[in-house]
Length: 210
Length: 292
Image (cartoon, rainbow over all chains, first blue to last red; front, side, top):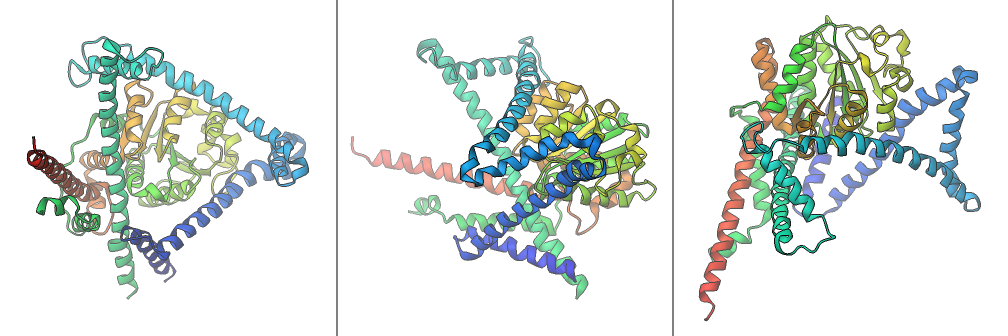
């Protein structure tokens, strides 16, 4: 019974959200606010139970002498709340600085080593050949060069540079078109999931209980 | 006048048609053909080379908001692993629902294979916050990121985890991701630790992942519901005993979903064509009417 009740609440909230397709209304706003609130609550609960408890509190309580270094992230985390006390609000910036520095460091290496270099490498190809047709590599190289010229603003886009830049726009448009097509597919998939929920899952569970 | 009415068609009529186009194929299966593409075949072929001694790291990097696309691919890949007795270490790195999705899908699939034992053939380590930091630290030690399993068992007491110290002990990472996390498995984990990575992602994120596929940073890619349906098709073709699982009435699968997807795409394309034709027709008529 509890499961069916849950399914019916889900169905009601789904219909509340779908009602926006007709026009904005209080049911949609209620579902939207509920979703935002529950998401935040879920996130706090998940992080507490899955990260703070097993990776911070349990090791500290179980084996303090060997895990004392965990006090550093604990204090840095607590320090973030200083921003709510105006007199010492500036102290929160120390924790933010550590957080930002860590992720800037990770991202710099990640982007350069894991993205820029391999992607440049993947573009250094023989112009003839490719996975599907002999022109694949040529199209790829031309596209990369033209799009890079389009985003190069130190030379005025006139004459031959303008022509190459315009070709770059065409490549971008084809890329955006493909991405948009995929986006439509993604959104329709979500609709299929909801329809399946409303007309298969809910109906089947209700039938079983009746 | 009729053309004007067509161009100004109430969008709610289109919504209604899409709703009908989605619902009918869900209720009555059409069974459009599925043709697997090379990125999907590549992941399938890779798993076919693995066996009982190998370990796959399955990362649940998505939540309920994209479950209709990702859950079918996660089910298919896990079924494939369990069919081949490949051991699975499952984790979740997506904050809004990853841990729930991982638990549900792994639980469902494990229940289909009662001979497999929790902790020996598969283990669920649960969710960890700070995605990139967690990914990087797993390169040194899984135990420091996941000191306990999702059920609260210390990792040193889990037989499977005694064989997994870091990425060197992992034969393949498969990320079921909803956003940039799939990309991070390629540009961080594959780039820095050399572990083979495959990604199953939403259709919205698939185009960007093709660049990583071309550069060899990911070895296989399942893009959206289409990718999931292709994997299901390959799985059923290679393991016919699984076919009833995908044909059961009332069970959502990507192959069934693709029927509705195809009908909806036909409706959308029809309206794009009609809308554009009407627009250009009206423009031509107006320029012909204009004096001079």
